[in-house]
Length: 106
Image 1 (cartoon, rainbow, N blue to C red):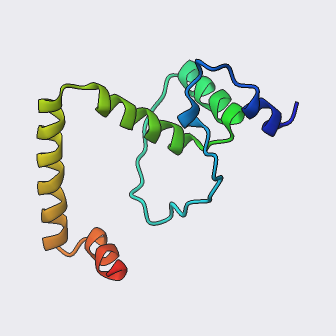
Image 2 (tube, rainbow, N blue to C red):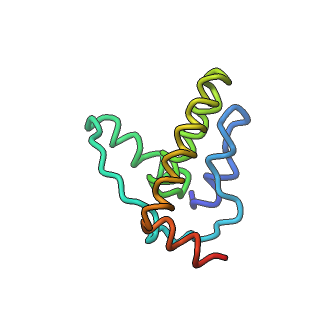
């Protein structure tokens, strides 16, 4: 079975947002790097999910993180948004790589 056939043979209850329909490549070289440790079983499942969906591990984790944030109470999301905004403002003031990227896009 080809990857395309696997993607189109998904069960209705499976999360469709895991399938990147546009298949656009995204340059991640300017993203901050994050190193994490996984239990071997979790890493195997992440690899299997990547093989099944054709998505890179970072994209799967990013989607799961966004879904988790959407599931927490609104007041907690508000606190997270305030903390995130403060951190971004400090990085922009300090002339971090984030600032250079923001200036380059203007």
